[in-house]
Image (cartoon, rainbow, N blue to C red; front, side, top):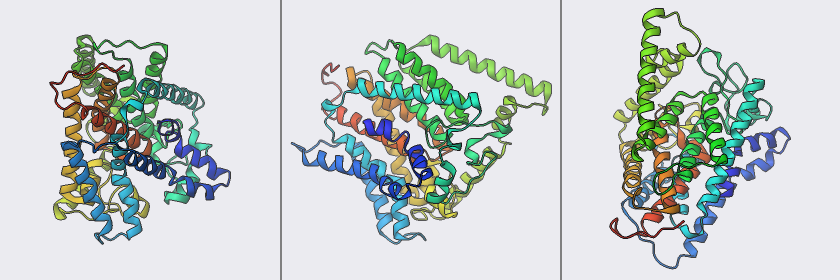
Length: 436
């Protein structure tokens, strides 16, 4: 957990700085360290099992997805080499291995409050760095060696007005800030993860939200981060998570406030459009161009979606691993992309996409089902996983969320812990122990 929280979040920045100081040979070793750590922990968990675990529907769905995607890596399907297919498999399905690492871990050995507090502290640190980035109008990645590192290892040439990539800027010349994360998109997604964890940490069993000073600072830092990461889908999702949380915990004041805010926002945008027409600039230009899909980013998403959907229609069993996503982008031969679901569908076909969607939907259903049945740390894990799954849903339509190691590993390790928790209880009707 310590490595996932503190090591994975600064992973790319640490590698960039190492490359900057000429330690590229060391980077080759550390690039596989996280996978080796996960596999080692999984092996230890399997070796120390005292009884055969009880598996449920979601376990079998995940087994099926892993086996199916591994088949695409082993068989000569698609135009990519065996090595390239293995790299694509790591991006497409290694998080399933992370899931089983959490799934087979002894829940009693996890001090949930302690590690969730560490995530809150990490959020405060990320917010503080974002504040100074904005204050000096300077991306941390501009001085960490990020551009050279990404070009050397992933073949992505520097682009955009700031010598990093177009990800670091938005329409209208607004600079996006990534703090110590890989890029602003990962920063925004990490903020959604942090928000889910902070809410779960400070929500009591009676649904009362009682944050301490650290919690309030973390919430403030998360709002600062999501604002200056300036990524539209995660920004919307940030408030969507709060809205869903308010609904499931029956916090009517929050839900009514959000309703009135949305109504006021719609009226204001309508007024701006009717009064000024196309003569708008600044933030309003970004908002209006997003709504009518006239900005280059939105058009790019639509074009990528259409290409991906056409590829799935023409090749329902997929084009093979590495045909879409990060590996394909590195080779300059990507089909579709910029959508987690389409990326899976283009590579593994309709069956792989159906399995992934079934897993995702089942997690949300299980989270809603067990939320009011669990207590203490078990309930905190349940609520955190439920809000994470909901929070990542919107960004998945505009990015490959699972390609971020920090987001993916944290998400799926906690997901495994959640399923391990509920499988300890044979039926929902069972009286559940209060484990604080």
